[in-house]
Length: 308
Ligand code: NDP
Image (cartoon, rainbow, N blue to C red; front, side):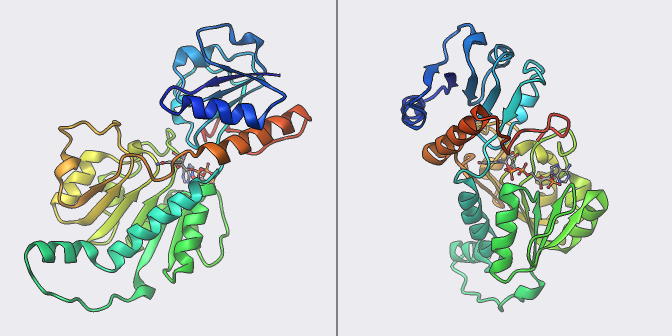
């Protein structure tokens, strides 16, 4: 079995070595401009359109990430080739950590106390009512489900939103455009964990974000393009929204002159909410390749119509 590995970056050697260890029966070949038709599988991370076009004959392409939006923007990858994404692989735990921090930070008023500290102001606030502090989770897939269930387990009422109907413990689940309109006005914090598709592009814009209650926070852990950044800025400047914690941006790295860098109500992290971890990712991909070789079906195959 021959497997083409495309991973450009500092960790390329670590990925290669880990795949060699996990699949000793396979020949793992680092990508060079070569004829990809002699390979059984390809494992890729952010390939170019030209590289995607070369993969027409492999049995499956494994994406070393959960989001496949850059891939689907390339018409070059033939629809006949199965595109398999990472499912959790250590990312859900990271998303949960980030989400807990964000929710508790807002619930316990830490941004206000940071302002107070800068002003040398001693101003204790009353305890907020947790039962009235609703948290929304947009996207109830592999990652969103874990986040929704964990925040709910902390005692917050959680509302979750997905395309189809979902049931998750005590989480109130809603679906479709009506569901989003019902969810947003209730949520003090809304956490985005949706894939970027034509349907979710710019979903969080002036009209939808204005449905949030006064002072609500947006936490975007998914893709920058879900948010119309100028609309978010305007709503923050108008005092409609309380703040935003953003891990992802329309353009990454965030350009040095972008207004988000120095906005007092925006907190930024550099696309680190759910990092791809070598060991769990390699174990997952290796197990799926072995299953496919035995003629078994695998999960995580991207639906090319839905685009996630
Ligand atoms: P999944 O495919 O498992 O889940 C996607 C969820 O979004 C599903 O619940 C799906 O609904 C819902 N959804 C999709 N389209 C719509 C729509 N139009 N309206 C309502 N709901 C919709 O993805 P993951 O949970 O694994 O990952 C989510 C996203 O997180 C990834 O696509 C990626 O962009 C991002 N991500 C970001 C990372 C980072 O470091 N910042 C790391 C990893 C992922 P349904 O259940 O009905 O199908």
